[in-house]
Image 1 (cartoon, one colour):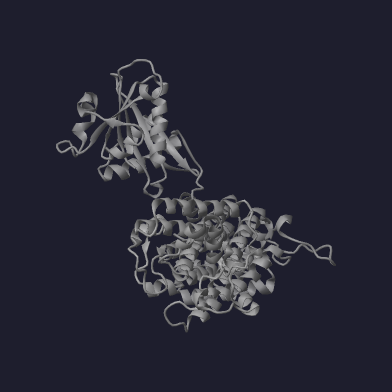
Image 2 (cartoon, rainbow, N blue to C red):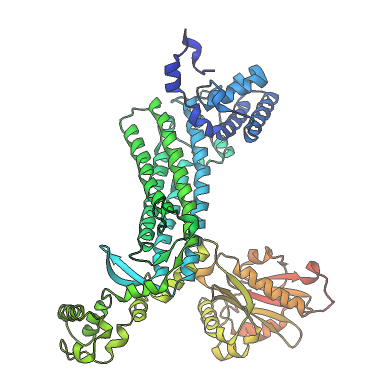
Length: 629
């Protein structure tokens, strides 16, 4: 059924129909077309086009049609419909009759197709972000498990300076993070509703487009009808994001193909992502990576094709825009498939640490350190550079690494070189000297791994009793928050004496939060010095510390938990209820005289009844909590 046949006296030729029809590929938008049609039926019912009963019939018919598609009861190849929009309307008409013919009132395929495509694209973006996040997590695991291993870094494909393998992994983590951010940005721009803009000038029916947009999950309506039906910027955004993402994957593949080669032998790829040769039995080919690299050009082509298609189009809609879909569908599918394969590849990698270290020691990567050493002795850098070059040339002729030269050989070139030169020529020194933010030293590498684990939800944490070895981290946390007048200052000796009172949150081996349970002689108890580091905020660690200490209180047969806090909502979410500060005489006597805000207290009191949450023996005691999150 054609939606435009009224003025035509004869049908389309078979050749034109095959050339024109889009159902063979736009049927993937069926669920989005049904979703948009349900939203439109509600909008025109409110505008008086449909009765409530008619709208309900249409909605149920559309839901039934969606169920048929979902259950595999539909074969689109058997339909003569022009596109997915006419297919849905035809199927609905078969079951509902003339009521179905009212659905398209005030709507055009121009605003309908853009709405469908935006709904589909939004779903794809969400799935791609999830897949990218899984890839980031796999790379973080690979980095964390191999952070002690060192391999050569390259410029111009020449060995340059040694880096940690984890640092190499983290370079691709940064790329994937940018891919995620590009998708997030693109999602904001595409999540605007064209529905109600009709063919190009807007519908004549009294449609609340804000309400319609909200019902379909859009952030709002498109604000210009001409632009709305002809805009394909959101498709270009996604094709550009896919092209950039595939470029990152291609670079990743190229690195690993080289690392896996017999010449480098830095890694071994698993059997699950490699193949063999039909002629040479010794071969183990990195086909997954080569295909990843190869599919990149295919995605680039989709971006270029749509740019060329759109560049000369006048406003508003033109049939050329039908060419937006196949390239987009294919590009996002290829990107998604390659990301799934990337995760599989990363999970299969085994590092050949001995080969990595041997290569890192070769190539005179420590020459820069020798030049810096001479600079530290007062030699101008340019002179130090010339001396080092001469030493390297000598070592090459002797076929020795720099660190194997004798002291008298070094002193041929400068008598400032002494025994203390040898430690700075060692591989680990070269790497760990670069402990600056973003560098390849062990400290920044571990810090970046931990930060990314938090960001991407893969942090491994534990809440436990504090140990004396945690004291430095506890002092740092307490001092930080006391300097901001969020809790009371405590000296290091005091904290050491009360270490048994403390619990900590440890994330990937790093203490990032603490709190102490203090018991007064009257039976009143207090959780104090509660704080979570700024870099670990928003992960629920403050709540987990509170729950850990509440469990400790339960084990001690305490009845109530009392809270003094400037963040009552935080504790109300844990089950605390508002209470009275006067119930804390011991707290007032012990600590309030020390508080800088004693005359202008802005803390609120809340109470947690342990007996309301678990059966407890009857005791009159309380816990006061002063919390920082």
